[in-house]
Image (cartoon, rainbow, N blue to C red; front, top):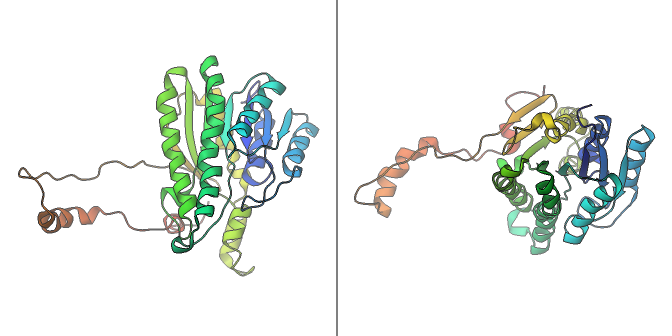
Length: 303
């Protein structure tokens, strides 16, 4: 078993992708701290059931698991996730920053409240839990951070400025952690998942049940994401860090990062007019298209 003897904390582990990750990590031998406050998709409410049920299912299958109901948006709550893992299982080896909410709105209707709520859970939450685990990773000279980003941040999507900003921010956070913590043997990577979860169900709620595209969505289960997480949490992935992966059904992608495509220099310096006359005509053929994530992934059906 690839994770025998490891302790993995999974945020948002009560449902969807997080639950699939928690179950597979346990099957691979890990003791799992299942964090989930059981909120609604927009972050409201609470329910102990999802986290406790996932932990109970792991124990019923012969594994080790404990539930934690804290909010990752609360620094003290994030500390409790790591503290509970160590109290229950003696150590912490991997953190899976999967927790998330959605509050979608077209840009001109996006409220400050909905902006803050999404940033708090996704970006601040990833920071809070990673920060809590870092002293332990540093002391033991090992550890793996696995953060969840999204095509909405990497490529773009309509009506998700808050979510996209948070998810691209997580990529920057992961890259910095990977660089800062490499000397301690600590890794940090991102995964952009494509799977039919309650988030996707909400985004596609306007589609008819007999829409052919819905069958493709429903066939991309959250369990397809879990194997890559289990691998990245294991010692076998000791040399894999500072990367952004994607998973869509039976495909795994490696994403590129922003890099300089073209450059032009002008010895006397640029003016606004020379930029218009010379620079932009030269650069325009290499401009990125304003594609949506779905458009980027549509050249062929999921494999």
